[in-house]
Length: 201
Image (tube, rainbow, N blue to C red; front, side):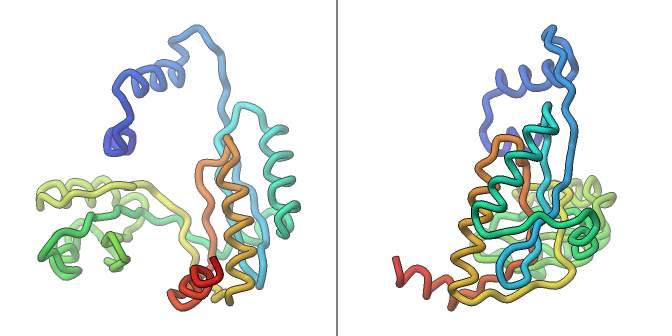
């Protein structure tokens, strides 16, 4: 709910989704969470999180998207070990806010680290510590979003321009599927490679 509100989803839509999920609309929809594993270009790994009311459809669509865009489906467990479940909250960057400011606000709440990205500070913790992290951020008056558990890679794979181009097409094709909630990967595309790709466009 907090994620929907932060992304300006209308209250009516949120209420309908809650009622549908609780079975209060008369519809009987059984949703399942499924994780698929895939390999991409240059040794990259993808961990694909789905929420679906039709497992066969989801499996088929993911398989088609992966194989059509140069990836291969991986055996269960062959990719999962490359990721760990972590809590992540993204704190909006504002004038004067530093990485140290954010770290001081969340350190006692169980944060493992604060990572500065281009537009946000990522607060990383154990998934079970997320409620305390949220509370600490609110008490510090820091605006945050995307405060969900995520699968984060334990090691990253650097891609060159050719690999990055193939990987982005693959990831985009998977993310466009209706049943796909999140696509996690260990791909690392450096700023120089991004600039190279932008020059090609």
